[in-house]
Length: 152
Image (cartoon, rainbow, N blue to C red; front, side):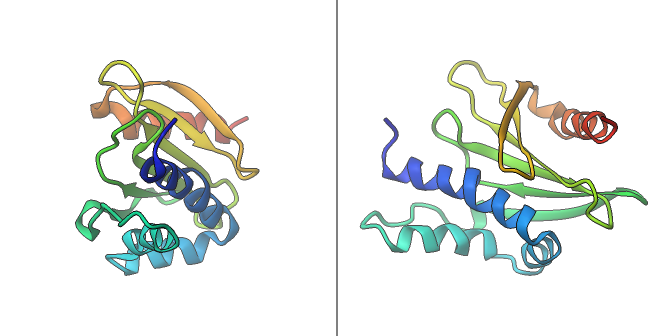
C-alpha cells in the first residue's frame, strides 16, 4: 500500500490534472504555460491539508507548449522522478486549436524494468493502459496513439 506521499501524488497526476485539462482546456493550458510554478503550487495545495510536508520543489515541474503542425498542439508536463509504479514521469496533452479532439497521455513508472508504460485519460476520465515504450520514443509513440485515436 503506497504511503501518503505517493497517494497524494497519484491524486494529483491521475485525478486533478486530467480533470482540470478536460474541464477547462484553454484556461488550463494558459495557466500552465504562463506560470512557472503553477504545477508545483497545485501539488503543494494538496499537501497543505496533510501533516506530511511537500517533498517536491518548483524546479521539479515544468510545462512546455509546442505546435507540431497547424492543427496539432502539444503541452508536455514534466514531474519529479517517479518512485513507485503508477507515478508519472511526464504527461503529453495533444489537442487541436478548437479543442475538438483533446487527449491526455502519461508516461507511468512500471513495477519491473526501466521502460515506462504509456497510459491515457479519456474525457470521461477513464484510464487506459497502452504499452511499454522506450523513453527516447515516448513523444512519438504518444503522437501515433493520438493520431490513431483521432481517426477512430
